Length: 300
Length: 228
Image: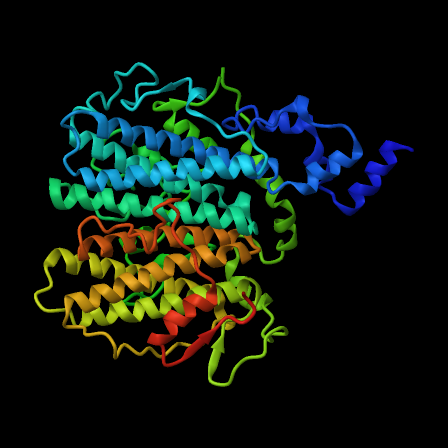
């Protein structure tokens, strides 16, 4: 039996077979993928087991990586709300914020179960090098030093987290293309994060005098603003990047269509505000990691 | 110490075969869809008097187009005939939502070109536009439905560019849904009929379930027979 010619024959039928089974490739891919931790030593060498690994599991290492990335963000969010609710005298809209916390906690549990059921190893809170909601890269003295003593700061940070979480999930959707189980689940969670973002914005405006709309509003700009400055409508300095990136929130073309040139309710063109707010934009995983690195790093 | 993985490369590998499959349509040239589209639906037998959305990615886009037509028509009516004593903050919110839905509708119309389904005739006789409760109740139903529709259809999308667009729209619909929920009752931004109290996931619906709800407000009925 010539193992290599057998593998060659398999590759003709399934060009991605080597991706599926290569332990070294998985290890390299997964070094920084938030603990999706495909255990290299555990990969069996018998041919039968290789087939089972390639086709018998519910989720590929790419999908597991996406799920663990999502789980990482959910752990961060759940921790944030838990700490906020535990800070004596901080949160006054207790039921409102508790609802959001409960959703994030449920997401943590859901994703942990999903990853385990799919044969992966879910990331846990113990894997964070630091978690620092003051955005101080672990110093606990970042720009949001009063995040758990000043309710308005807490709400502002919450809004940014939710908006960024929406963009993070959105950026991962293409990795789940065609996957009924996991794409649907990811979009279902993503929709709830968008509900949360809208809810925090609404609360800040109606109860605390902020002037944020439930959707991200960009100021008119001649160009795509990757810095995010044109789209940071939060009223918080220092979070421009959360609204920027390669596909920033002030994008007004979609799939090659210039949204500004489309007819609107009031005329033959569409306003910049409507064109930018009507579509939320993705962040890549690398962009999310960089943007949120003042708040946490999940590497051992 | 952090090591950076080239995740863009991973993304490309994952979607590589899809991109190659749709190289002709192109990510940027969505307007080419109409030129490349097959006008005959080979797999679906339409019902007389019912507009079917078609199959494949064209079907998905037409499905979205149908729902956005419905929502746009609704909010156009809301702003044209605002309910009694509509507060200025609510007028501002609902005007923005109107503009977003019209934007979505026009986007799909432009993207689909000659593959687009017809303009649908709506039926809002069940809605009392002078009543805040009736209007916001209908708005919540439409927005919630739209979220479940996008979430439920997305796995059928084959072209990653269209999936990205669906993703860009659904979160805005969810923002709308949460706002309307809050306007009706503060704190109802994620009611348990829409967001599971156990998993925290928004529900998703099949096209047939969504259209059963949507068709109640459409004189021109819509079907999506090639999708389960």
